[in-house]
Image (cartoon, rainbow, N blue to C red; front, side, top):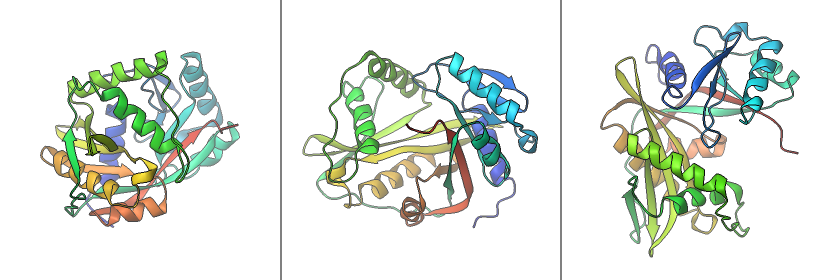
Length: 267
């Protein structure tokens, strides 16, 4: 496990700073509650140094602010810093998930299959909505199930607009893997300047179900890390589970703790 001094402090600061260009911060006791576009919501988080002070009333107040703004009820924190917060979140009616938190310490280059090409996505890319839909399909579809068709609904159009703005501003760096002219995997990293140094989080690495098992996720993650490290001093991610974490460990990530996410349970 990496032992760089202040590693978790820097990740906490990243999460505190990341919403600022897109959202207004409200306070619910020791919680910061970013209120911004519903197409790109940020979870509430304990302010750095305030983790142990979060009470049930604070969580309920944060949820009320989010729901009043049309945002999903969500709370996120570093598990190693807020060990009692999971119980508080559950008493507020939220389901808690603990995700492995990893940092890139020894990047490994992973080559994609010969027939796959990797592209950096520009803000003017006409296929941006398609890449966005690919992410939704990949995360919503279990292996062997048919992928859902996109509806082109207003919410999807609005999300594409926000994503395009983020890519143009450099707050989201997206890459897409293409096979035979078809996008088959996508992922991003999100750079933020934290106390004069850049930190970036790798997010949304997703592969269409029928293309899984070919190393596309590992190869795409490797490329995202290589790109991020051109300017970032620290690159990290939260894995979906222990099996996914082991994939990232094979491309040079190491576990440093856990990231906890509390949301309304799916009914």
